[in-house]
Length: 298
Ligand code: CP
Ligand code: NVA
Image (cartoon, rainbow, N blue to C red; front, side):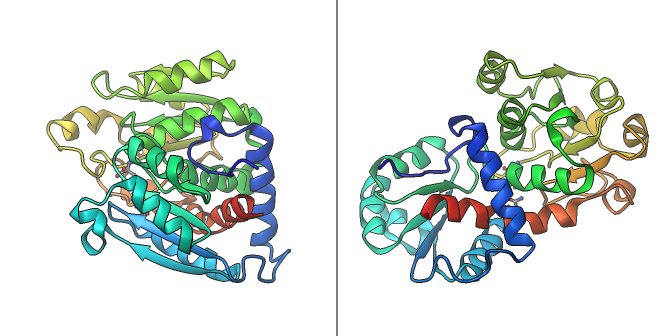
């Protein structure tokens, strides 16, 4: 049987993603408790920093009864040039599933090609699928079925934006992306989504995107590995502030994958205000990824 990798939302099917979220919600409610992954081990490979992904995967795996080993290039032979392919072959002899956070999506693809156990994308420069599973879970907890909703992105057309684009095609919601002309969202992801009939649009005006939206979301102006350059100046007009939130529906929610920079991509008033769902969103990384782990391993 083919390995059940969780590499990107665009290579998943919509029913599978929905099944994972259903299972995640049950796990959050304490149903299906027990130790379904007893005796199984997750290896986490981090080539970039992480707080949420690291802790939520570790705790999630432990709650499911499994074990975790965490690796970084500096303390493994990857840092001395052992190939990803050989690392994949070796790790597969010890562990049952591998999660990797890395810059190059090609490295993740190489890991998945040579691993004989499932591989999970813990973020690359191009996407962050686990994040968007948690984001959709959070949206639906607050506002119900996302399929008829409008989600507005205001900011850098980055890796997190790409996974939102993939998600809108699968889950059927309207996605409006407001990005500076110099920091557009992935044209490949947009073409993929449009091919599937997704309702996705791109503008350089955040107020056009936010009008009557059910959710406004954004991300840091400078992602891991980016040069700050003139990003702050380019992205200032895309800040999610009280005025932009007021353009959305009165009961719209604010999401941010975190870490956040108050006073940059979001004001403290929005981040810490009544419409912010960011702490539930961070918590839901745990539940959503437990669903992903169970799907990969059962
Ligand atoms: N949102 C997110 O992935 O956070 P970390 O970088 O802390 O894992
Ligand atoms: N776009 C951000 C997301 C961090 C979780 C980054 O890649 O740094």
